Image (cartoon, rainbow, N blue to C red):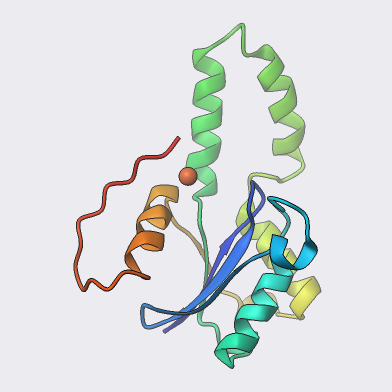
Length: 155
Ligand SMILES: [Fe+2]
């Protein structure tokens, strides 16, 4: 199975392509845009990965995003509510971002794939995974191990 992994909209956007669990190519968007910690959709990195892997986007069976948007939204709301009223400033910053669709990564990715690569919506399967599972996968897949226990320590 060919999977395109995407990280973006926060910091250090990147793309990677795997086939049957083996990494074929990976790149960070800042290498192409020359913008340090670029958080934009990694269109350049995706194009590079496809070319390096000798594939086209239509060969990709699944697009995986490194974060679960619903969980992230829930975490942000929970943090804001826990720290009321001192978190009112956070709330006023969060609401416009939420309203603009910032926390719906699947929609944003679908839109970018449509505009940058001409992919029709029905040809694009997107799945969001837990952030820390993504961290674990980034350690496991490039490793030489067939099995591993992984501890993720983040944030
Ligand atoms: Fe993280």
